[in-house]
Structures are given as structure tokens and as C-alpha cells.
Image (cartoon, rainbow, N blue to C red; front, side):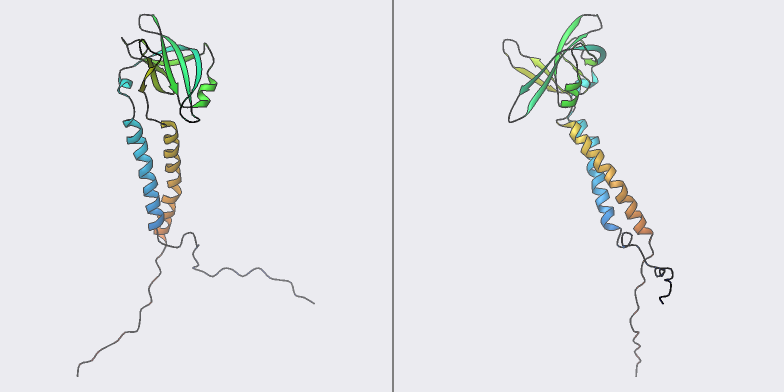
Length: 197
């Protein structure tokens, strides 16, 4: 007749988790690198690519006039939006800008009201929220002069930066928890005593 099994034996005292055991140096260095890269992108790389016109613009309400998608190098497509906006004297102007976010471009409808930022005294020097560049038509040609509003691929870079910043948080916590763990004491070797004759 078999005897009923008792409760499982308790784990030995003082046994550390494999996750918390080890040096805090590795997760600390990884967290530092991720944080430094994220802050460099958010505070330096993206702001350094912004245009100086952002400090000169006035905000108004405009409308989406036309939308177009133009194939460019490779398989890329430029998403173009033409806006109509009034200036301070209620005179209407048109502006053409390029968007890098296809979802934003798809969501725009003709005659939809959007926020427009324009430079007073420079007709056509305007863009909507989310635009990457202003396209100024060149007189006598079908070419446009491109004026960057934000850094190239700013949306993607911002997403990567925030992802890296969030990924660094558990590494900072792990490094802190490991630093709080008691250090194993080193075993002392045999003591040799020398006596002088």
C-alpha cells in the first residue's frame, strides 16, 4: 500500500534567482547606451534637421485642395498635398507640401480643414501639421524647390528613439536590483605563518 505523498520540499534558503544573479554592469551598460542613443535622436538629430522657418510661421486654418502621389526613385512614392489658406489680410494663397506618413495622406479628404503654418509676406511658404517639406514651384519650369520642415524620416526616428527609451527602463531596473543583491563572500585560503629563526 503506497503512502500519500507529502508536500514538495522547500527550496534551499539563500538560493538567488538566475535573473538577479550576476553583475549589474551588463544591463547597466546596455541601458545607458539605449538611453543615450534615444536622447541624442530626440534632442539633437531631429531638432538639427528642422527648418529655420518654424520660428517665423503664423498658424491659421486652411483646407485641403488637392492630393497627389508621384513615383520617385526606386519604389518610393511622394505624397503631395496642395492647401488653400488665408493670410492675416484674408487673402487666399495656395501651398504645396510633401508628407512622409502615408496613413496621414490617406486620411485627408478634399475641402477638409487642417491647421496651416505660413510665413507672412511669402506666399506659398506654408505647410500643414505633419508635413515633411514645402514644395515651391519654380517659375518657367515644372520643377519644385524643396524646403525641409522637419528632419528626414523624423517620424520613424522618433518611433525608434521612444522604443529604445522604453526598452532601457527594465534594464535600469534589473541593474539596480542586481546591485542590491548580497555579494558572495570569497573563501579565504589557508593562512601561512612564517617564523623567523
